[in-house]
Each structure stands twice: as C-alpha cells, then as structure tokens.
Image 1 (spheres, one colour):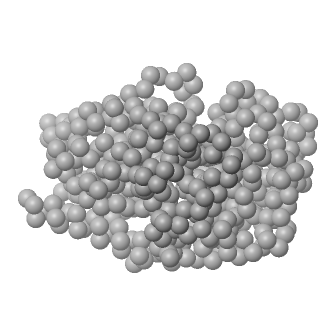
Image 2 (cartoon, one colour):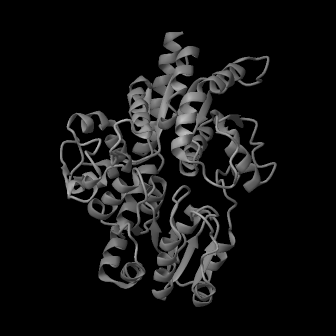
Image 3 (cartoon, one colour):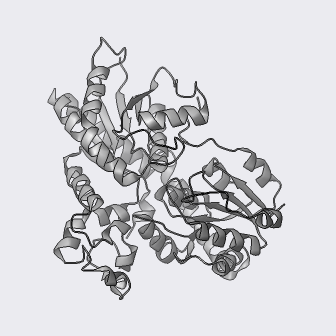
Length: 451
C-alpha cells in the first residue's frame, strides 16, 4: 500500500518554517510521505547553515523548491523584506507551485505516490488555486496565535467601522490607540494598539493591508484550518532542522556553567530590525543589571553597521554575558539555568516559552507580536512589557524584577502552570493530536468518497 503523500508549504521566514517543520515531523511519524517545499533562496540558506548533505532528507521525507520571484539579495544571509516577499509570492508563486505538483503527480518524474493533500501556511494561500485545479484537498496551517488570526479576519470590519485606515498620523498619539475593541468574539480587554501593527496606516491602499484581506478571504476555500496552539490558550530518526542561521551549540555548554534560574535569554527573532541606539540601550541595560544573559544577535539585527557594541561593554560583561549569532531555542528555553526570556513576542517564541515554563519580558516589534504581548502580560500573567522607546534603566529594572522580584516569582509560577497545560495538550491521546488526526482522516475519507 502506498503511503499518504503530503506536501508542506511554509511561508519563507524562519519562524513559519520551524512551525511547519514540526507539523511535518508529526505527520511523518504517523507514516506519511512528506515533500517539504522551501523557496530556492531559503533552501540555499539552509544548505549554507547546516551543510551540503543536510537536505538530502529520508526516502519518505524529501525537499523541493520554488522561486520566490525576487531578485538576488545583496546580503545572502539577511532576512528578506516580508512585504516585498508576500507581494512577489502572490504574483509569481502559483505557476512554479503548479508545475511542482504536476511533477510530483507524474510517474515519469516521481517515484512516490501522487499528492494526497497539501498543508500550506495560511500566508501562502495562492496554493489553493493549484490544489483546486488538481483536485487535491488543502489544509491551511496558521502558525500565529488564534487571537491574532481573529484580528486579521476582522480587517473588513475595522474598515467598515472607520477604524482603518487612520484619518491622519495624529491618531497615533491622540489616544486613538487606546480605543477598546470589544466586539471581536472571544477577545476581551483588547485595545487598538494591541492589534497587528499593519492596521496603523493612513494609506487606504496600503499593500500589506490588502494582501492580508486577500489571504484571509481565501481561508474559506480551505478544507480545514490548523492552528499552532493548544486549547487552554484559546479558552474563554534523522534530525531534520529548519534554522536558516547556523546554530551555535556552544551556548548550551556556557549555560551548563550557570546556576539554576540565573540567566536571561535574549532573542528578537528572525526579522526584527532595530536601530543602533536601541541596541545600545538593551546592551547597557543588560550589563547594568549585573545578571547573567545569553543574547542572540543576528548578523542583520541592526539597520546599518553591527559593529556598534563598544569595547567597554564587551569588557563589562565578561563572565556574565554571552553573545551568539543563533541557537537551538527550544533547548535553551528548557535549560534549567534560564530564568526568563526577553523576546519580540513572535508566536513561535511565545508558544515555546509557555511550553517551557519560562516567563517573558516583551518588546513587540510588529504585526501579531503586539497582540501576543498583550495576552502574555494581561491575560496569561507570564510577561512584563518594555516600552517601544527602550531605555537602559527600564531594561535593568525589569531584568532584576524578573529574576529576583515578587512579580517575577508570580510570573514564573504562572509560566509553570502553562507548561503543565501544554504538556497535557500535546501528550499521546491529547486534544491536539486527536484534533489533527481527525482532520486528516476526514479529509482523506472525503477524497476517497469523491473518487
């Protein structure tokens, strides 16, 4: 009997690739044949970071590529502009994806069973057209939190209510951002400022606003939606890696030398860009806290020259601070020395910190990170927020409070409660596994019935 063949298509940024890879591994462990589709640009980055043989995969876990339609970047290690990337994929992605499905279904080019169904990132919804043409069911996988997804889904209502676009830039400072949004089902105590940041536009023709509306409109054409979450959060082999930067595993040895609950882990994700001033404020805030920290600084974290950390800072943190370019984040978060996580509040980082029982210091940068920050700090009780106009004194204060203060202890207690809930939700026979298996089996059954 031929294996069920699943094509997995992530949106081509680090966090979305990692989330899709986890799902692909789960499906593979259930006996499915996996074809994992990266863009050509990210495929090459993965080869550069993990070695030339890293993507040879297994006989039943293979990698394919499609072009993203963008010109070659000047810096092959830098993250791509996600707005330009989204627009280009929307315009140029369908034809090469259609050709790939044709190749995978053609015995002349492929020695595996035809594609049974497709799992695509919800921000790669152009793939639905190809799925429809080939008569293949498609599931959309949403790697952001459901609350942020609900905000995306209600963009037409924001426009109808006159909230978007902003009338002018004064609405960014006149108190409008504190407008209570109390009409989205299942979401309480949400302000306009907590919504994904693309709604803060004065341009009625803003490219990403309209792109998001198109993506959300297509979700109704999917056979099912899967969310990277677990029920409690939404209440009212061969190692196949997905990191686009080379991991520095020596940081784990450094963590081994530190006491339990004594280190702040700092990572602002794969696409956050900050100014040199912001970098220095974070740097001196961490140094002045006199606490241990592991700080992940990507090569493209700062707009401009990265060599801005002064020698006196490097001297000051000897023994207490470690700088690295990338790391195995889940291993770090589960290390006993980690006391807290200074984060940009991307959904992967939010979910991984909750699942590891690690409280967070939030500095959201864009989009759904603002919503995730609000929930971490005010609904789940595991976070403290730093102002977007970051100051070193504030960084020092919250780091000390998290490690030694009463609020930090309460946050740790809540984080451990969420860790327990996450473990319960993802254990064998849990709601997450049952729901995923139910969706897949129903779709396959309907496909057989149709035939």
